[in-house]
View: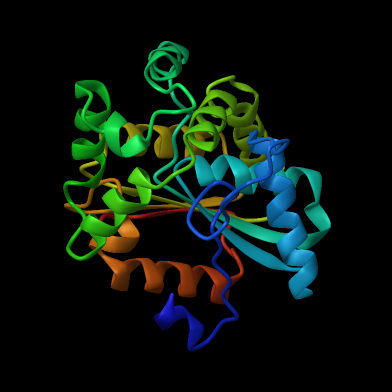
Length: 238
């Protein structure tokens, strides 16, 4: 973020139910659509009407939904380590393990979640790895479950694909070569894209922005600078 701020106005925020966006109100909802409207509200508050929105993992679904609902305010998308959401059976398992009173720091002791966290965060360098574990342990359980449930329902993932397929606005799709699921989804999205660039970072996992921040900064900066001039191009592993 600091490196991009040298040339661009950058905003980063905690989604509702995460970090400093807690506690959420009792009647708050945590669907992908709700997260997308939060993003739009932040852009409007900041007076930004030509945003390049960067979304990682489920955040890409949020970014796509916001761009789909408010195309006049989104110039382009940067999709990092895309996923199609959790499988419904995984979300059901998570529901059994997350009653409202159970802290996620306790949930992390369950093999299903512990293995998921280990796989997801193992390549993150310190001190970021510890911070990721801390952030997970302090998530709102309701926010985590309801967001995962919404992301698993299919419609948000379809919205991302439809945006990539139909939008004349350029998209940059970034994945790590070691992130098999993310790389497969990135290639699938690129194959149907109307105007997109695909960049695969060599020897990189699920967290490109932490594992190879310099490469991510260059990719995003070059993409913004070119304004997606090439309608479709493939960047080889770097």
